Image (cartoon, rainbow, N blue to C red; front, side):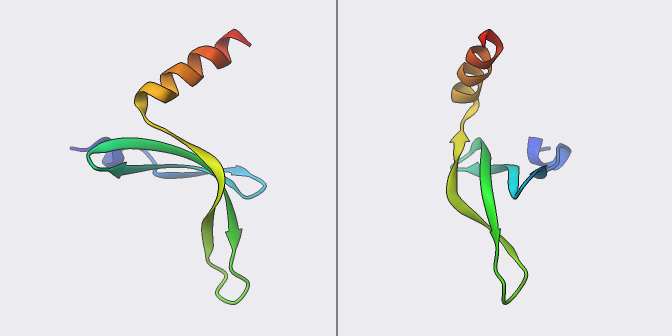
Length: 68
């Protein structure tokens, strides 16, 4: 069983910002990204505005965030 099978892979934070998880080359990645809506189709798509963390980078971010 994969972690992606257990947890939601897309969670809306608000104002067009989503937290998503993906698997790339066997590595679990966490994205915090702004999404836009295509006016012709109504489909949301991710933009380049955002960040992507692997597990080590997220642990460092979380530790720094806790200190603030």
